[in-house]
Image 1 (cartoon, one colour):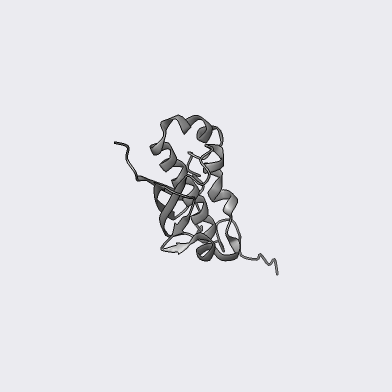
Image 2 (cartoon, rainbow, N blue to C red):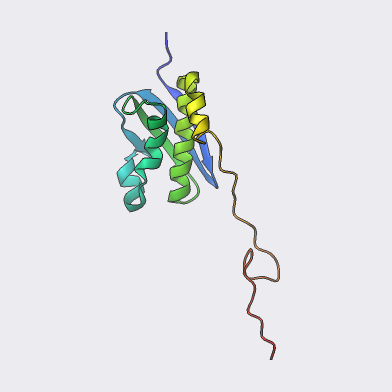
Length: 130
C-alpha cells in the first residue's frame, strides 16, 4: 500500500514551512488560506510551482502548509524548499532534476549582525571632522 501523505520541512532565513503533499489537483493551502490570499500582491506562484514543473508533477499533488517566522518573501522560498523535499519523499527518482535545479539546497544566507560603534551591520555613523 502506497503512503498517501508526504511530509517535509523547508527553511529560509527565519521562515519555516511544514509541508504535507497529498495526491490531488494542485491546490495550495497556506495557514488555512489559499496561497493567493495569504501572499497577496507579492505572491510568486512561479517559485511555488517550480518544483512541480521540474519533476513534471504539475497538478498531481495538493499542498497543505503551515508557515512561521520570517517575511513573506522568505516564506515563499521556504515553501518551495519544503515542497521539493516532500516531492523527494514521494518519489526518490526525482532527486536528480530537483538537485540540478538547486531546489534541495537550503539557502544558507542569514542576516549579518549589527556591530557595536556602528549604525548597522555595515553602515557607520556619519563622521564629522569639525
